[in-house]
Image (tube, one colour):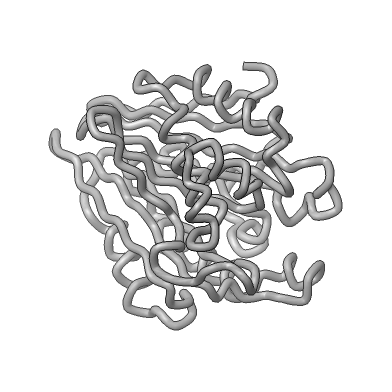
Length: 270
């Protein structure tokens, strides 16, 4: 996440690329190091009283998409008062569908309510969430994050706030739907001038042996920039203060007319 255009944009993209192509933590625990099942991003930019949105997904590995990476770097050079980025590279199981429709971030538009973009690391119960959104017949076509996106778009109210978002996320945990981790980053657009978003760090007890892999960090490269990133990312990006998030920590932000506010809380305390 970025407030204002920062000098570290290219450094962030380069670190993300390295974390995606040489995931040293994953290699230590699973013998794999490349997130090779596609990547994507959404960028929201506000400047001169207007909103600009860029959305990109491809099943091509980021290591084979130099043009896409360079285009993303170019977005960081555009004028902005506030700029928000969600970027994700996918590594999934052999039995999961691998196509552009199942790369992150997912997008769900709810007419009259909002548009939601969501990226997720970890595993949740696809069967349970598909049942919740009445899409059991589509389980073989989509990933768990697809159904998670549908679920959140249904459950998060139109007047989203840190309190009601935290309540919805806590409900997923309390229902036992989290198999490994519910590490998610979301952007919610109500209209051009009114945008919310959040990042959640939650690791299920059964995945505690992989805590180092799943844990998210808050990074402050400068007074104008805040980033929530994966543990592997921090092995490549060392610019600014780096703080590990606690289990259940949620970073919630809101943008109204180009002004950004950031809040840190915990879904079990909010």
